[in-house]
Image (cartoon, rainbow, N blue to C red; front, side, top):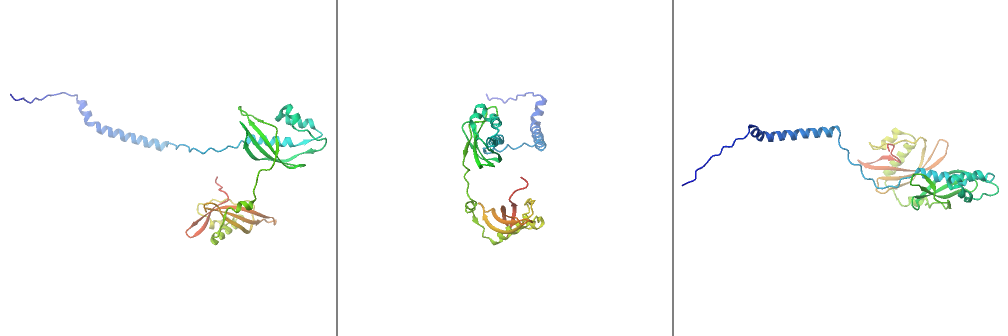
Length: 282
């Protein structure tokens, strides 16, 4: 006997049938609306890029520098006829016992600090920093005082120890610095630099513009000078800037030897200047 085919009829709600037919279209509509909303959000409040991670740089503690400078001024300024007043000045920094032993004044005379400033800084022990303060005195001349300053956990400043007289920071002559750079041998560039500096120092903005790039921003100096000579012209590393040593004079006849850094570029067969010594926008 052969098997007979059968048909099974299943009932389904009408809303399910309609939903299965319309679902792809509704999905497409939903994606379109979501895309429009996302575009509107980016247009109204675009996301900000994450801040770049800057390399760690040592921050200058201006308060600690000022503390060290003020102490150096008071330490080196004294009048032998007023020892008690001098000790009271030092008690602020050294305490009563420290002020008694910090310095023994001579029987007569006085010393005043004409100016003082921090010229060197280095890390000390723990939370200390050692500042070398240059102080010009009227009797002993130029002195260098090492002052150790402690930054307390609560934020205050204090001396970490008695000061020390030290030597001047190491320095090298300007000639040794210039010897590291190569001379500019292009006559065309020499001419442009000399002409540009002549107009720059003479406050001739319109004449200077002829040697500037279209993007150059230059701030002219307030003192009008006359260029006398271009003494040296050196390439800086990368050959995108030059180092110019010039002689210039003012209306009174005073002559100055000056140094300028100029950013240069070679465009369409000619040299142009894109910056002179500084960027006025920064």
